[in-house]
Image 1 (cartoon, rainbow, N blue to C red):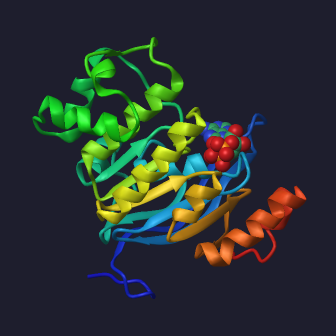
Image 2 (image 1 turned 180 degrees about the vertical axis):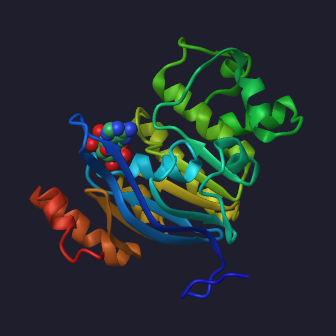
Length: 258
Ligand SMILES: Nc1ncnc2c1ncn2[C@@H]1O[C@H](COP(=O)(O)OP(=O)(O)OP(=O)(O)O)[C@@H](O)[C@H]1O
């Protein structure tokens, strides 16, 4: 078994992960992520934050298998999954909720939750997930997952599907995006509950102080690099000062760990 320096079991490990794309001019490359390394233990709640365009969503997509790193390795329970597809990773317990969820014509909300659960679940069981994300279940359970759903509704349905999946790692990309303030309070409780019930590890990309405050650990990604990692007590005060001073990225990059 593999343990990290804090003594917890390493569930996910990123080793020097880089993601570079070709720039418009043929011979040049643009670094979206550069040498990102970190480990995630079982049943942890980790938030990833940082300035817009810093590389957070790319990192989440690389973990879920939507993008492949151009360099580096990803290990799940000690096994190298760098070249695994999204499906293989999903089968082995990695769930991903998009920043902008996809819609599936012809599929109902109930179908989607059932598919996510990977087993037959009752109507009341599916409704329970919808209620937890603040949707009145009877109004949504038989609706088609199409363009008639608003962005916020779609987002909540997707979070319900990730909960139904109940995998060892759930990755959420800005779950707060498009969610109204009232529902947001409930959403925080959803994540707190998932964490309390130890339903696997949660990796959330977020800019919201309340989500960062709930996390066991915060990673700050800026300009494609992991610039800070620590407990909320270590990381949050500097982040909030930076936000107030509006110095953004420069402040975050102080004390860069490379
Ligand atoms: N395939 C790609 N080709 C070219 N540029 C890309 C590609 N993927 C991401 N980028 C660029 O990489 C940068 C990081 O994007 P990413 O979406 O990961 O940022 P982010 O930190 O999640 O931002 P936000 O907080 O705004 O959601 C952006 O400048 C984006 O335009």
